[in-house]
Length: 114
Length: 283
Ligand SMILES: [Fe+2]
Ligand SMILES: [Fe+2]
Picture 1 (cartoon, rainbow over the protein chains, first blue to last red):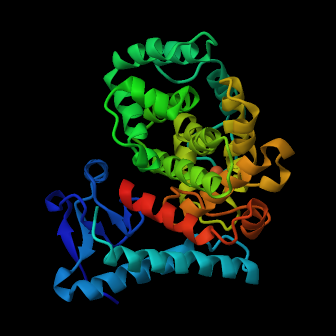
Picture 2 (picture 1 turned 45 degrees about the vertical axis):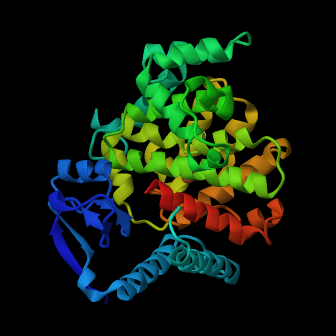
Picture 3 (picture 1 turned 60 degrees about the vertical axis):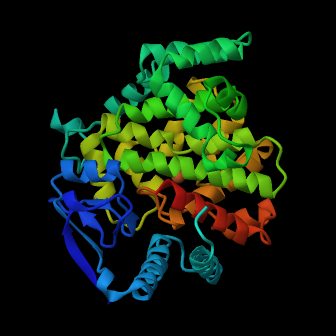
């Protein structure tokens, strides 16, 4: 499992990635990881009593971080599709979606931001 | 009294009461009189764009909304606009109406985290539906945008009138599809609920068909079929990539028929990449 670290939500910066799901005290899902922090999200979480979140441990290196993101998203896509019937047809569709994400993510690394 | 309550509901929620509140909402939407007046002016066939933009400019919140959409990635290739009138010309009056209506409606209950994510989901589906329309050469792209924006509008009503039951719904990990669980819990699924609202608010049939059938596009009436399929597919894509709030990528009949009926088998990779790019930009 890739490394992550717990940090105080109040000290996080916009754009940092939350890499573990956040639940409230009643166990209700507030944020599905991975998700970037923005001011609105931060305000909402703080208002709901969330004080700490998990972000990637950058000391584990960029490549490791990238691998972690891709792996998490791949799992997440499969999980989100879990209510679809498990037919060979649906499985193929899920693979198309995953492949498109992998290509997109790889391309993103190559293209400098506009 | 407890005997008339819906079994299993801890908040004293009653289906009949909920139904009545929905009826009220079709008569008088939960938005400010100011916005309502503006909406009525948009329905006026003699409406002129300069007059309307003048009215919008008096409301900084509305102006910001319209400008934000006009400058969103969807229209990015056409340059940046700073005047409300230019933004209106770019997005069209019908889209402006939908944006204002939907945004005001969402605002009335925005403190609920599921509603905030539903707004993002709706924007993503709008974007995706339009991209699918472009890829398939559909001409009425504004309708696609609008249908996408409104497709899940019915969901906003649950936290509005049945917050506790809605929270219970979100926690429920039953394997039944969302619409089935909604019908069980609230007596109406979000597609039916949204259709009633859109009909009452005078949106054209293609829009409420898209709302009604986005989880069952095969049942959609023929003239609206392409728009329904596009919204259905954009909805599944957004949900699959995590821009889906509480919705799973459920669709009756599976996703492949959508792709095939729209004829996007060979362009699906590009469409998926566009939606992923959009998601990256709105985060
Ligand atoms: Fe839906
Ligand atoms: Fe949806």
